[in-house]
Image 1: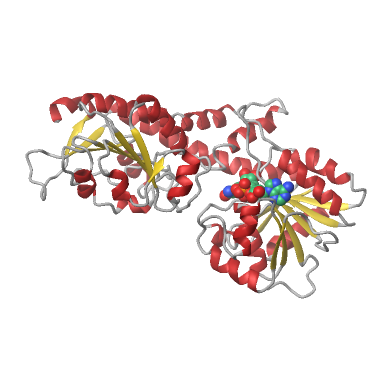
Image 2: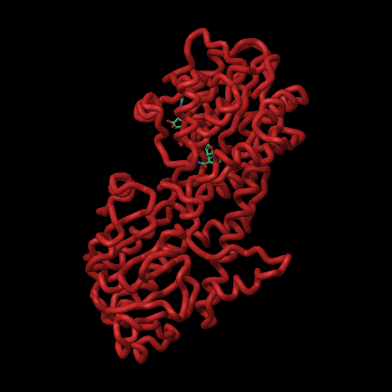
Length: 469
Ligand SMILES: NC(=O)c1ccc[n+]([C@@H]2O[C@H](COP(=O)([O-])OP(=O)(O)OC[C@H]3O[C@@H](n4cnc5c(N)ncnc54)[C@H](O)[C@@H]3O)[C@@H](O)[C@H]2O)c1
């Protein structure tokens, strides 16, 4: 718990989305009094019922505890006469169609904070922004309050699905406008985590976040390039990458697959936007992002070709695992590549019905966010499907009985697993169904010659499909 003489005991957090709410609960959990501000009435209603509006491991239990202990209150605006001494800004920073950050929410909140500012308050910016926004956009708005204040940028680096755990363990990066701001923000985050990394400026801290995420995006892009290369060379990327990583201290390449989500879909663009103001274009960063964005159309084109070769009339497609990632599990559909995938599949199979299912995201969220039909169970989704596309790497897809799935599907259907979690010559399939993996030139097929109970997959190069079926 925080020491009784700790200077900043009452903290106002503005924007109770994924970042704001998890931080609010973590801080309240260690003893801070949190004044949460959230404009969205649906979110405030959920919080009034002591429930989060998204799924996050360990969050609901702690949320309920801190609300019941009176350490988290929620308001639509900063309450008049609020005595918080620290304001943390956690609103969204999406990009527009031209990949430029929409800063309206940050500017609105800065104005709201300026209206509440008291001498020597600390402002912490936690939203991801292009380099320079804290100093050139937020600070000038706060200056209008006409009182002295301190300001620091402290990026959020947790991964959805493990945010509560990581808020207490990840090193927190802190960069203030001056030493006093840096030290004061460092003391605050030290109450959460044993390790705080102080950097020399607001801009260095802003850049750390963008570099961390862009590096991740580039590493996934390279894995995806290895997937394209392996398909072309008649190999399996999973086999190549696993073998290259195993026991090798300089390995570490991730497995290929769709890369999306509310951060990676935009952070390389935000990096580029800030650097353009300094006359620099980060070409590798942008190339990686653009390569990752090609996966949905490539997959749709591949499936179109495969359906043609198998004389498969595609009337129903099940896209399963539609949250933007499967591990750690999340219900978040923001930035998921399932959305462009569905659009691409619609383009090549205009007459097919498309339904979705996800182990975590609800059917109602899928219907609303992805504009497709949705089922509440996997068997409902795959029944009668000509194509089953596994979009994310949730562990549920490793445990599926593929023989049952193949029996429920249309004859000669195709299971396309972006993550290759079941890539194996021994995969049991029936009903003429084939299992294909992104990044692999191999196809595992049900063998018509074998009985249902003993059927083993037969491997064939994609080029040999017609003779193999
Ligand atoms: N989601 C993540 O895991 C993650 C991780 C690291 C960094 N980030 C960054 O953190 C920031 C927030 O991300 P998020 O996912 O929490 O976004 P979010 O959209 O889930 O949450 C933002 C919240 O702010 C609220 N809001 C907007 N304007 C407001 C105002 N004037 N007053 C009060 N509330 C207001 C919105 O209603 C929303 O609930 C973004 O810049 C994002 O890039 C997100």
